[in-house]
Length: 132
Image (cartoon, rainbow, N blue to C red; front, side):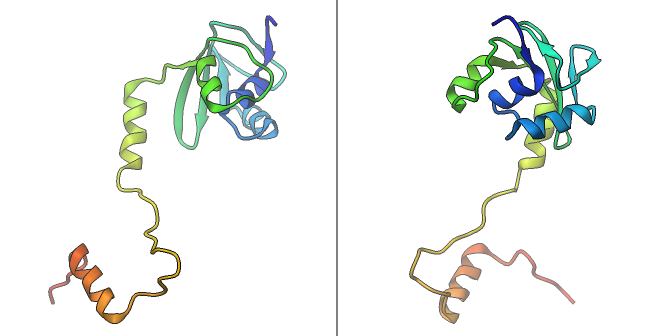
């Protein structure tokens, strides 16, 4: 296998969830191979740099291995090097800071009682304490 379609490769290494989504993003101009805008049918070869604009981030990948079938995440990571500049990676870290999952209670405990709510509020602290 000497070359693979770019839409197929982006899908197979799990950069996009579906091949259709990859093709749509390529058509909208969010993917480049080297310095030229890619088309879904363009071929990618080992050693090329693929630039992807995804969710506001500019990602860069160096193609290490060509695959045309979707594989597990552990294998997919071996097929490319993430050569995204450090400044862009920091942009992601800054965006992600403070974004954590929803708090959950153990299954079957129901809603907190008034007393439990007060304890939770005391534990968390008064973040929204207003002075009039």
